[in-house]
Amino acid sequence: MAVGVCGSDVHYYIHGRIGDYVVHKPIILGHECAGIVVKTGDKVTKVKMGDRVAIEPGVPCGNCSFCRERIREVNCKIF
Image (cartoon, rainbow, N blue to C red):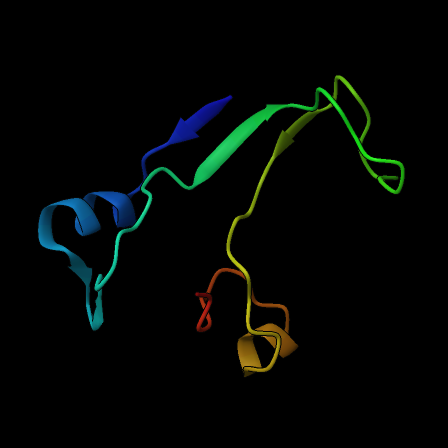
């Protein structure tokens, strides 16, 4: 597995915040991950063992205009 450190990670680490978003609880940095699938469950259909994958760990709200328009470059209230 590989984990990247992006600009937001650096801001959280150095400043404890990005703009108005202030870290008030423990946060795990290094959220951009990639790896190779080593096992899948019975209901998994889109990946198989050996596939190289990258993840998007954010959980979008699904309700804001950005989510409705599927604009992923602009973060909604993703946490």
